[in-house]
Amino acid sequence: MRKLKNTLYILTPDYYLGCKLDTIIMYDKESKEVGRIPIHNLEGIVSFGYRGVSPSLMKLCATMNVSIVFLDPNGSYLSRIQPPITGNVYLRELQYQKMCSMVSFDIAKNCVLGKIYNSRWLIERYIRDHPMQIDMEKMKRVSNDLLICMKKISSCTDKDFLRAIEGEAARKYFSVFSEMILQKNGFEFNGRSRRPPLDRVNALLSLAYTLEVSMITSSLESVGLDPYIGAFHVERSGRPALSLDLVEEFRPLVCDRFVLSMINKRVINKNDFKILENGAVLLTDNGKKKFFSEWQKKKLEVFTHPYLKEKMEWGLAPYVQASLLAKYLRDELDAYPVILWK
Image 1: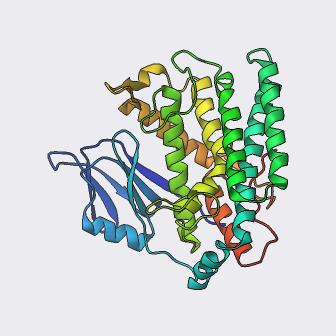
Image 2: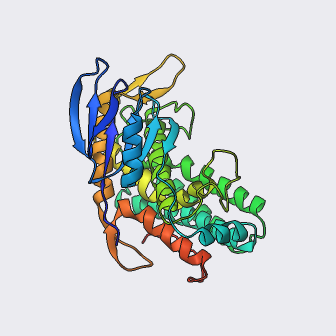
Image 3: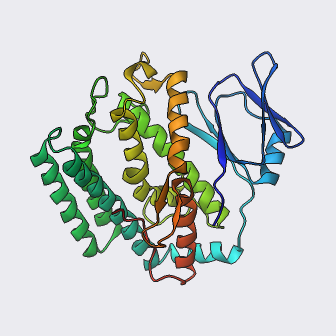
């Protein structure tokens, strides 16, 4: 099993990164050294800023297989620097062939099924654990609606119909998302808003989704798959369609649970956000520190993979799923086994 390493988060926009030997060096806007981090225990760097990194550090990261992801100060994705793709070129050729066949549709159906199943599981858990704090009838009704959507997938015959099912399920799910926010002081939620997020809940969800997609992209490339050739999401230049396919099962299971836990346990509060003139809601520097501290803890949580029956950290789950997808494409598995949580 692959070892889970750390991620270095650079939250200060004015920092510039360089290196000496195998050590990352951080400089402030006056070019004064403010910190050093050995690269050996890192799997990635996430930077919220525009000053960038030195060419020597980019070379070092490529050599040490460390990815660099750039987000703007608001948390929106900008770009990534990824070490060369490893793995067998024949696997990528196989991926291109099978993504143009019915195999693509089978993968897409499983990804959507995983998303809806795990969304329903999260709702059912709140029905069980918090019956006095939620609208039980509304939650049960949506849970039943999601069950109907899951049944529709088995008889689905084309991707357009599958996308309609996924869209319907997402609308149903987010119609009761606010019920799962038990501490609503400043965390009101009236539906998904993106680019920019227009409330505190959406700000947290968007950042969590961005980070999970980045982890999945790195995982796909590490096993030799092309993250831009997907099964369900429409392919567009610069869009990691396969990463967006695989993230579906993780959205409710990892990202949504993580955000709800931070809010309901009052790890984060309304003062950890700022509202811009255009209505965009963003995390403050202190809010980002809380977010990434908890995100690292989430990645280290151990669970038992329902298909492999092995214990592992959640931070390794994207790599495991990428590996299972590669096995399926090589005909070593009968289907792509999404994580269906119990």
